[in-house]
Length: 468
Image (cartoon, rainbow, N blue to C red; front, top):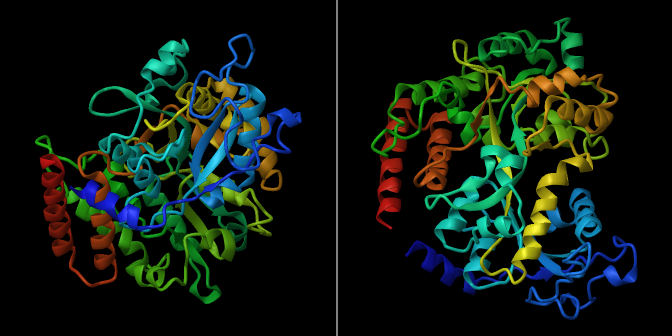
C-alpha cells in the first residue's frame, strides 16, 4: 500500500528528466558518439539484437542508461568511468538525471522504475537496494553471469548482494571504510606525538582529544556529526545485534543506551567536540574538519580521504594523518563500512550490455585514482601496488605511507561491520534512530524515554513491514 501511494505521488511530481551526456570527446572516433537527440544509436534502441557477434566488443555501439544525480553525472570520476567503459566494451553511456531524494521521501529513481521508466544501471548501497528489491524492480544477475561465464564469487567473495530469495542482484564496486583522520599541525602545535594504529581504541581517542582540546584557541580535539551510525556505533562494534532472535528490536539492550550516552557525551559533557545543539545550528557542518583547520581528529567514512586529496576544493596548509577507526577496549579491532554496488533494473532494454558495463565499473573504478577501496578481492601485493601507484600520489604532501593505508583499509585481521542497521524495516528504523537520538542529544528527552521510544517505534515498524 505504501509503495502504491508513493507511486501515485510520483506521477504527480515532475519525474526526472534525461540528460544525455554523450561520449563525444571521450571516444576515439565519431562513430563512438551517441546521437545528439539523446536517443540510442540506430539499431541499438531497446534490443539486444544490436550486438555484433564477430566483434571483440560484442556490445560495441550499444547505449545504456545510467541513473545518477546531476552532481554525480558531471563529476570528473564519472566522466572518466564513462570513457573507460567505452574503451573496454564499446558501450555508450547516457545519464538519466534525478534529484536527490529528501529525508523521508521515496528514492526518485525507484519511483521512476515503478512507473516503468527504462533504466539500465543503478548504483546504491545494499541497504538502499533492499527497497528496490521489495518493490520488485531489480533483475537477478545470476543468469547474466552464468551466460557470460563470469564467476562473481571468485572476484568479490561474499560481497555479492543477495536478498530473501538467495538470488544475486548487485555486484560491489568499492567499500567505504571508516578511518580516523587527524590534523598533524594541531598535534605539532600542542607538542603531542602522533597516535599509532596499534591498540587505537576509543578510550585512547578520547584521551588524545582531551589533550588537543583548546577552547581559548578555538581548537576542538574531536569532531563527529550526529549521524545515526555514530549514535549506536559502539553497540555495533561490541557485536550487539539490532534484532533479537525472534526478529523484534533489540534496542532495549543496555549496550544501545550506553552507546548513545557515550557519543552525545563527547560534546555535551566532555566538550571535546561541538555539542548536538552546535551541530543542529549549522555552525559546524559535516565537512568542518576539511574546511576549518581547527579540529584535531575526525572519525568518518573513507570518502573523506578522497575529499581531502582534492586541494582545489579543500585547500589546506596542514598535513593529514590517518589511522584505523577506533574500537571499544576489550573488543576485537573493527571498522564500520558500507559498500557501493551496481544493479540492473527489470525495465532495462539492454540487460546483457548493462551487465558488461557494471562488470567494468566494479572491476576497474578504483583504478581511476580517486582514493577508492575496491570491493574486489586483492592480494596483499596487489593492495600495496595500488596504494603506491594510486593513493600515495594523491597525498604526496602529507607524508603518508603504504603501512598507513594497509592498516586503515586493507587489514584482513580487522572486523569490517555494516555502518547501517541491516534487517526488517531497517530504513525506517534508521530514520527513527536519528530523530529520537537528536532529541536526546539536544536535551529534549531523557535517555530512558529515548531508548523506549526507539524500541517501541522500531517494533511497530518491524510489525508493519512483516505484515506486508
